[in-house]
Length: 452
Image 1 (tube, rainbow, N blue to C red):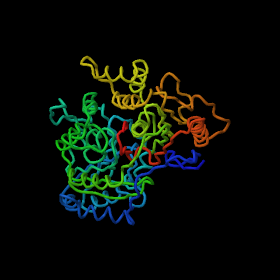
Image 2 (image 1 turned 45 degrees about the vertical axis):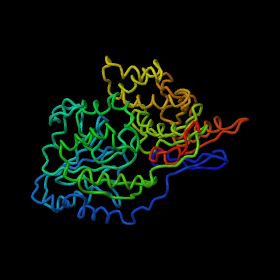
Image 3 (image 1 turned 135 degrees about the vertical axis):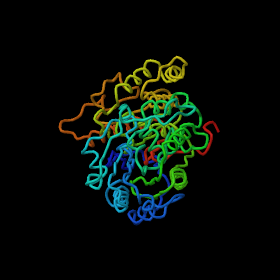
């Protein structure tokens, strides 16, 4: 046996895996020795546009779009990207600054969460923090239409700003190819109907809607189209490593700066894998705050699992509802009733009426059919211990085990994870086991055809 440390939210838990297990991570990458200096330099010497100080001159107001807490963007702390942006705007005499949280269709963030994520710079005089609410029509305004989107609704605070700035993290994205760039605007600060169109069953059923692909990716192309319609004066995007340390800062024009970040990320965000495995172990990462978000890790794990293989997911689901919202739960129940293929056929049918969050269950279903079924995915998350067994399609390990008296979440998670690893890897036949240590932040790429 050998001991490994798996990410558990913002901390780690240690478990033992078979000694012959392969533990794979993305290639190492150099982190920035002075992130704060890099941020300042990029604001003054951006790609494809004037510097932020130059853009700020003569502007009375500005909106800075930030991600919500489902993305580990380094906004605060040493090297945090938000304080330098706000300081630059204030030096340019921009007295009205709004920080707009790109919640998309996610819940609004509480003030304590915002303070923890953004730091003190976002709560000073002349700065207002606003959660985008995709269902609040008073917060939205129409800016036209596209071939795919009948009416493009965007946050009015953003549209009314003299200076429009978008920030974000560039990482692999299992629908849009890569996060960051245009996604801060679409779906980040768009109306709910725009998000629904972007996540329609037909778009996500297209081959191009997948990780690491931009050219021919309909999800990326529509998001970029809408972001350009809304207007973006300046972006600040970062790349990070598996320790959440900054590896690159890219600022400037929407497309040029984002593509520069993408090319940098490509150099270290993939993991070559030589074969398929019986058991694949993966942490849910920072993004895995609920079951809804956990599919991002599982979707990567099933890429390199045998058709009769198993996937073990470890997560710290800190969201107030560790599963997701009511619509998402309804879609999970439908997936259980119809099965993966039946669910996919149903949502692609011409008479299907779109349901919020169906897209995430669509991605779960695509993962299920790579294995013998959803029960071959074992979720080890302590917050799911009271979740009804008929709600989740996968094997809910926490619900099958009783928490010991005064057992903490990390201790409970460690115990059920170790128990599951032992159960699935031990036996008369040796199991080929893979640990994807980076979770959803690196994409395993099979180097041979599965049937070769």
